[in-house]
Image (cartoon, rainbow, N blue to C red; front, top):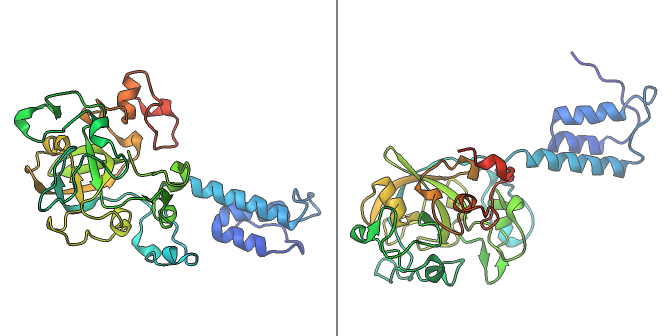
Length: 309
């Protein structure tokens, strides 16, 4: 059994907080450093200096555990309305058996899809920036891309029913429900969701896509997108995921609606495949063209470590 030197009369409240937030091992180390003045002079001139050191240890420990969600118990009414910590996961689990519909850039409104797809939730010129109409008709496609042009963005895209920004501001709950928010946030009103990679499974096939729009139907269901809730009822049978024609074809899905499973993945988990080949929003395609900075890296891993294939 390890014995620690007797603790002096220094205040112990900061130590108790350190044990709670960082862990017994790290706290024990700091207690040993503070204890036994007969052996060594304390490196901390004051309690406030010690608390600052404890805060830094806590932040470093939290950064090593990714992704992680913190749900506040106090704060604004919006934050207070977030469900309890238990519905959120510290990892990216598969969301199983989700009704999945097919949508495409340039799609016109229909009875069950009243919103045209010339624009996305994050790009008012989506169709133009993509390069044109992403025709879902298999006879009008070349492999996984439209037959009429080479897309300027990744043809493997999807939509999930949450938007982290509204009217030029970041939604209050986004800071606590999005696991990667702290690492990806740049400025108020800029999405940290656009371009995020998602793995989608149908049967024994798995394809990878980038999150480029919000839907189906909703833009506020963070309890499902980041938690353990199920999609809410809607006109498409409770659909909770939209996928592009390229994803549909790669997975062998039905033409308009099927059942899939999905989960978020880090960029270094995206394997080689057709989802790496096209798009100025696709870091893999830009890397191949010698332009690794054109698309945002969603991971804190060094860029050179992401391309070992």
